[in-house]
Image 1: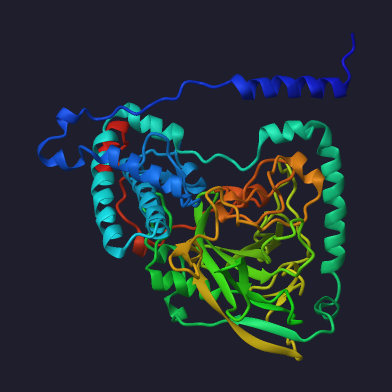
Image 2 (image 1 turned 90 degrees about the vertical axis):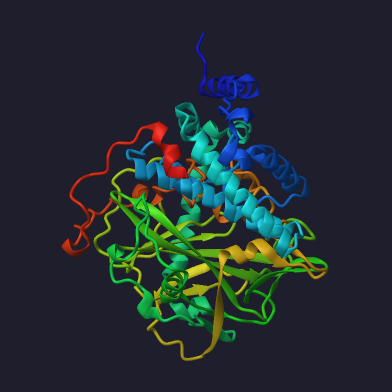
Length: 521
C-alpha cells in the first residue's frame, strides 16, 4: 500500500507526540558530600543545599525568578546562558574549567540580587543572604567539582532549553507548513526591501521630525584600541571595568530619527503604573547590554541597545494589552573595536535584519534553516542613524548619521543598563521586573499571523527577554546563540597576538575533571 506524503506527516506527528508524552529518561542526580564529612572548616556549608532549596522555593512561589539565566539542574549555585553552554564540550585546561564554573556561579549570584529586591527584602536582609550564598557557592563548588561524575553532570546539564516547542510544531503540521512559511517570509522580505529603498524623506513623512542622540557622560578615550588591550578571562572573553564598558556603549549608541506626532511612537522608558505597564515618553531611554559572540577563533564584543516605544491604541489583539513596543539594535565590534556588523530585531523576535559594515565579511555559501535577511544594499555606515516608523518604532532604513536632517528637532536619550529593567519601581512601593519568569513582558500581546504558530514559537506577538528570543520561523536559532554570527558570515582569521602582550610560551597543563573543584574554590 502506498503511503502519501500527507499520511507520512500524520504518522510522524503521532509517533512524535507519543515520544513526547512517554519518552522520559531517568534524571541523574549529583553526588553530595555526606554531612559527617562537613566538619571543621567545612562546617559552615553543611546546611547550604537546604538553604538553597528554601530560598528557591520562596522565589518561585513569589514569581520573581530572574529569566536571564537558566538554573543548572542539581546544582543550585550555578546558572548558565547560551554563551557559557557553548563551552561545555571545549574545556581543555584547568583554567578554562575554573573560569567556566566561576562564571556560572557569578550568574547565580547576579540573578539572586534582583530576586531579593523584588521579594521586598531590606538591604540588610539581602546583604546577609549575599554573604551566606557566596560562602555556600564557594564551598559547594570547591568540594562537589572534585567528584568527576559531578563535573561531567554539570557539563551535560549546563544547557539552555530553546524557545521553540516541538509539540506546537507538530500540531501546526510544521513538515507540511514549511512551504507556506517560506512563501510568507519571501513576500514580507520583498515588501521590506521596497520600503528600505525609498528616499528617507518619504519614510520620515511630513509630520514633525525628531532625532535622538545619546547623552554622553563617559570619557570615550576609555574605549580600547584593540581587543588585546582588554583583560580576557580564562575563556578568552574580553574584560573591562564598568566605566570602560559604559564608554564602549556610548561610543556606538545609534542616532535615531522619526516623525513625532505626540500620540505614539515616541521613545520612552517602560514604567509600572497603578493601571499596569506603559511607556513614559517624558524619559527618552535606551537600555544597553554588553555581550559576546564567538566568531571562529575570536570572541567579539557585542552591544545590544533596547528601544522602547509607546504603542498606539488599536494595534493589539487584546483589548487591555500594554501600550508598549520595542526594537533591539545590536553592534558587533571587530578586533579593533570598530563596527563589523549590525543586526536588528523586534522585541518580539520578529523582523531579524542584518547589516554588514565591513568588506571583510563574506556571506556563508549555505545556511541551515531560514536564510539571513539583508534588507538594504551595500554596506551600513560606521556611524548609523536609524529611521523609525512613528507608529511603533519599526526600523525603516539605516543611513549615515552625517546626513543632515534640516527639519528635525534634536533631543537626547539616556543610556541605562538592561539590568535596570529587572527592578522597575512600583507606584505602591517595592519593585517588579519588566519580564515574567518565562521571559515575556506581561500583557504585551500584539498582532501575529496564525501561520507563525507552525514555526513552534509560542505566542509570537509578545515582547521577550533577550535570552528568550527565537529568530527563525524555519529552523531553531536564537538571538543570543553563541555562534549566530558565523552562521551568516564566514569567520575572520584571529589576529596575531602582539609581541608586547604575549604571555608564556608553554601551554597550560591539561585538566582532569577532578581538578575543577580546586579551581572553583
